[in-house]
Length: 164
Image (cartoon, rainbow, N blue to C red; front, side, top):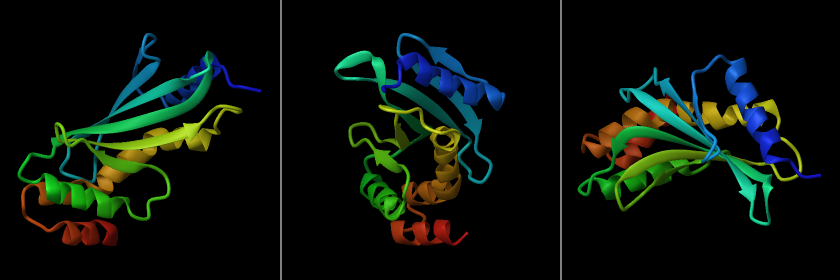
């Protein structure tokens, strides 16, 4: 049995409201927006967009729920290759989610998704949509800054991020 879009949106809303997080919701885009302060990095905050996506063959049925965590830092042309290497090294071995770098504008984000075609994801899977981008930017944020400013090599920065 497929999951309806309203069921999936309701499940995400219940998680957010149950944690008393402030959010905005766009019914037109079927997307939630939340903002969190980052506590373990010099990056100041992370904005998370959670989108409930319909199936391609039935717009009333949910296909997946996907989140993107965004930071205010973008890779510039000079540091792009090093930032890309850093994010690739950071991604290696991650089991849920990944960093992405847009070579057009240097945008950096962390993506997490879960399947919602046949059943609603559990609360833990939904919570990962919010907690993992925050966790990953807290863990890898200082290294990202150091690499983008030319203060560390990508390899050094990942080693430091993963040793703490």
